[in-house]
Length: 162
Image (cartoon, rainbow, N blue to C red; front, top):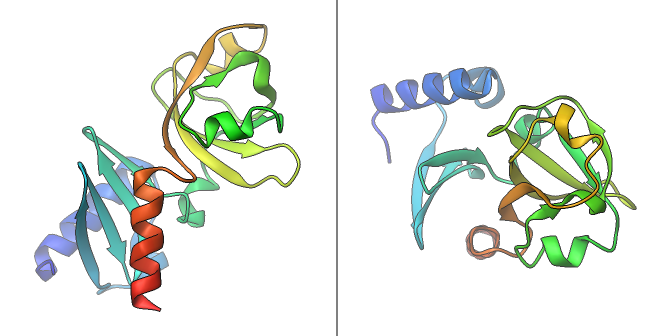
């Protein structure tokens, strides 16, 4: 468990990074746990795994709807889904739509075309403006996806708490 002063600092830092007021979402004195899995840290706030720190990047988990819904989005065709859920990067031909703008290095939410479900969080290798006319090549680096080790750790954690 974190001390109260550490919690406040953590919430302020994350709120600033993602431009979201976490205190409004989780309350003034949330319960914060840090769980280390493989080479990642999962931040659990009020029993909800919301963030993960992996390879010096802090990002939302696919379960933190309040934050991932604010990210720019790309929609991929259903043929790309199994590859992305196996860790493949997102290729230009698989992208059907872009919602919002992003710059190189920004986090982008990847949605499937049929159900609109979040299947991955990726890091942009190009800006959204450069992506529009692109017909080939990798455009997003897949960093967290349904079925990865972080997803499995969160799933196992959830089952233990239930």
